[in-house]
Length: 211
Figure 1 (cartoon, rainbow, N blue to C red):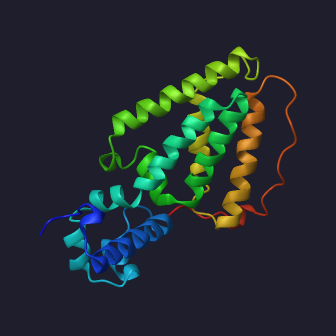
Figure 2 (cartoon, one colour):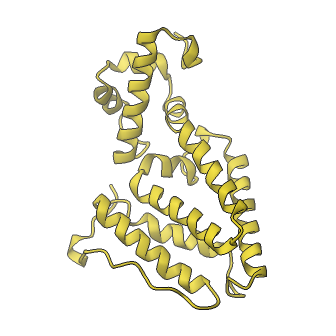
Figure 3 (spheres, one colour):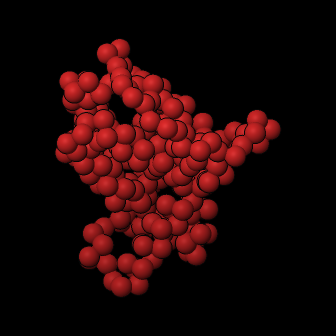
């Protein structure tokens, strides 16, 4: 049987099945990651596993279709950051979106952040992201908004630290992620750091490991 086809060419009932599968995939992947059982996606969509595999023969095909819109929005976020007349604000807004996605949508974070490369033209996307970050950093340096010893690798360090929050309850993860970003971004800046967001209500005994 053929795999995923142009949605416009599908019958109305087939289109509804496809959208149910994609919505279910986004929900399951967000909760459990892209390695979640395909049977869990089919169950969430209310269809049989055979129906899922007829439409999306591989996990890669399903993840690619499920996150196509998010990938487009992610590309737009980079463009918006580059268009911001305030380089530091553009960089912060971009990092806030990435960090929020990283702790709330494990599926998309896995697809975009280098751990499931077959779902997209990964080399192109990675190069594009690295180029955009380098340009943002350079502009912020030139306007005196970042410390002289800031390095784009510090952004990787931020994302590695932020990824550890993905297993926490949603509200805790969001509050902690915002505070972590504010802490580190103030360390990145040269002059006049601002105030931090309020701390997340969490204790060491409440920390959960990402599953």
